[in-house]
Length: 289
Image 1 (cartoon, rainbow, N blue to C red):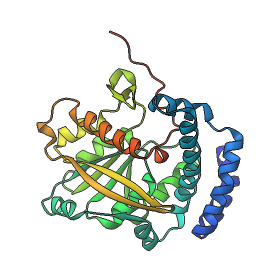
Image 2: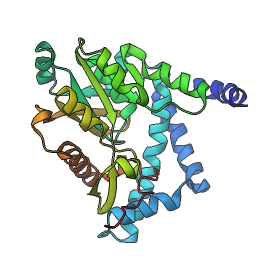
Image 3: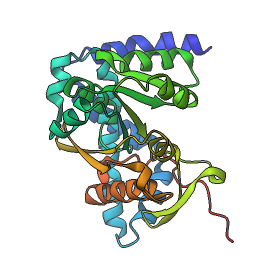
């Protein structure tokens, strides 16, 4: 059944990837209206926004929600477009700034840990990094349950030389790659298991934080880098790498996780449109002592 679903859907996906960007965004505008009519995760989005911005009124929340759904449609189609984007297009539409210090780390043989959130087009940031920097990028990901769509996503994400690693093989592969100069990237704002999480206040809510990136940064003593993604206009992104910690082994426990979440929070507050509000991020509750 999964194979049947994939082979029914894939021709439509592929045809979408062949569209020029102007036509792609026209389709996105149509998709936006269909998504709004469907009520896709409307309650989740509104609840997340109201809890995250208790000082905003209903009109302001509705405005952010509307802008988010418009962007979500762009993000979906931009991600699919990756299947057929050239290296020239990828570099032009996801520009990396201030990478000289990353090149210096590379020349010193220093691998890095990248932490970022579901903000902006994180899928375009992958090939953008590979095409604009010297580190070998290795993205940590969770495989899709449908193996056919997972294979499509792996093909999409490994274009231009990016490597990807299933989350359960992260440590093994990092140990195996210690002689290479790598950049191991985590989308680190995913929902963490409460039992093993670091709890903090994020967007006014008790939030469990995945501590894997911090533990690995400390273990290998790899500098921790945050990717600040901006969207100056539709279809274009600018990325500004920021050094959060140069010597992780000198940090206190949970310091890296806390600083990352606060940095991401500042980015979301500055423009909430581009974060993944339809994700059920706060489905766990902190146990009271």
